[in-house]
Image (cartoon, rainbow, N blue to C red; front, top):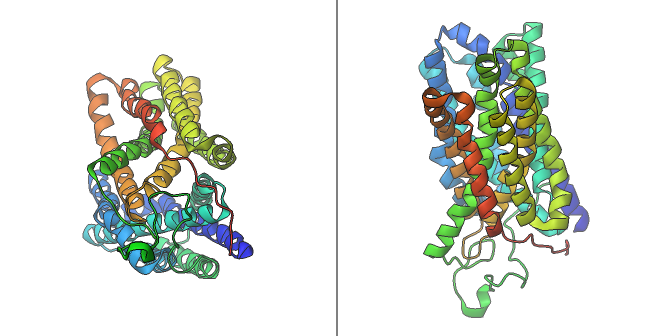
Length: 406
C-alpha cells in the first residue's frame, strides 16, 4: 500500500503539471485568434472573461462532483473535456463561438482544480508529510513549459487549430497514462486524531464518503470565510503581478516593452521556488507559521514597490511577493478542506470558488484605484489583503501527520 500511495503522489503531480501545460499552451496563440476573428480588445477581453465566469458557475458544485464520483473520475473526465474544448478554440469561427467555448472551459477547469487538490490532499494525508505546495509548484512548471510549447508552435507558423489538436491529443494520452496510478474510490475516514470524526457504526448517523459527520454551524462558516481570505490574498497578489506588472513598468516607469515582462518572470520564478520549498518548511514549522511568513513577505514585497518607484525595486518587490503568495493558496485550500464539521470537499470547493472570485474582481478594483491615485498606489489593495493573511494565518489547522498504512 505504501508503494501505491507513493505512485499516486507522482501521478497527481503529473495531473497538476498537465493541467498547467494545457492552459498555458493556448496563451501564446491569443494574438492570432484575435486577428483571425477580427476582434477588438474589448470583444476579446469579454470572450476570455467567460472562462472565469464558467469557473464561478461550477466552482461550488465541484465538491459535490468529487464526493459523488470520486476525485480520480472527475480528474479524468474533466481533463479530457478540457483538452477537447481547447481544441475547439482553434475552430471557433465567431466571437460568440469563442466565448461559448471559453465558458465551457471554465466550467470544467473548476472541476479539475478541486479534484486535483482533493486527490493531492488525500495522498498527503496518507503520506503523513506536506506535498501540496509542491504540487502547485508543478502546475507552475507545467504552465511555463506550456507557454514555451505554444510559443514554439507560433514561431514555426503552425496553424492554431492543428497546433491545438496535436497538443490536445498528446496531453489527453499523457493524462490517461498517469491517471491509472491515482488513488481510486473515496477517501476513507481519518484516524481517531480528528475529534470531529466518528464511525458510522457508533450511532448510525449519516456521514460523507470521507467519514465525517457534517456539522455546519455559523462558527464553522465564519472560520471558513476567514481561512479563504488567506488564499484570496495569494490570488490578489498573483493577479497584481500578472495583470498590472508589465503595465506598471511600461507606463508609470517608462521602460521598454522588452523589459516590461520582467515583473512577471520574477514573480513566477519566485513562486516556483517558494512552492517547492514550502513542503519541507510546512513539515517542520506547520502551515500556520509558513502562511504567516508568506503573508509578511507579500506585504513586504508590495512595500518595496510602493516605497521606491524604479524598475529594480519593482522586479525585486514582485519577486518577494511571489515567494510570499506561493504558499498562501495551497495552504488555505488544505485548511478549508480539513475544517471540522464540513463534509470532505465542501470547504475545498468554497475556497477555490472564492479565490476565482478574487481573480475576477481584483483587476477592476485595482483599475479603479489606479485611475484615481495612480497604479503604483493601487498596489495597496493586494498589500492590504496580505495583512489579512498575516492576521488570519493562525486559523489554519496544524497539518495532520499519519503514516501511510494498509
